[in-house]
Image 1 (tube, rainbow, N blue to C red):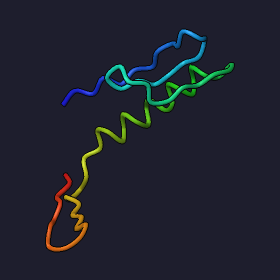
Image 2: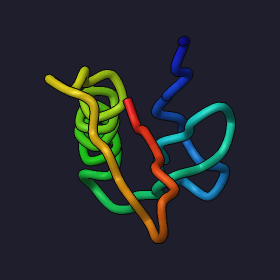
Image 3: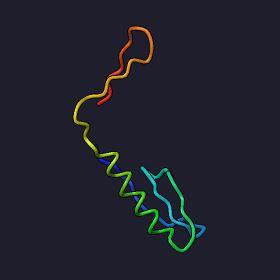
Image 4: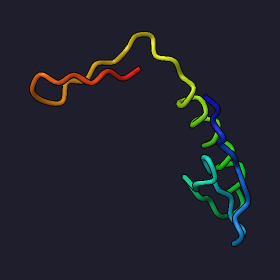
Length: 68
């Protein structure tokens, strides 16, 4: 799976983190770019993390959802 997670400059002078061309977070001010890059690094880590074991969630009844 390829994750296209980027830090891009916004037309109004800010910086944003975008996933597949969809803005996730925007930052403004003197440290905006640094904040966007920091948030991107955290999101990449979270999105590429491999769980040690599968997580099982049973919402209701006898149905079971398996999340890897």
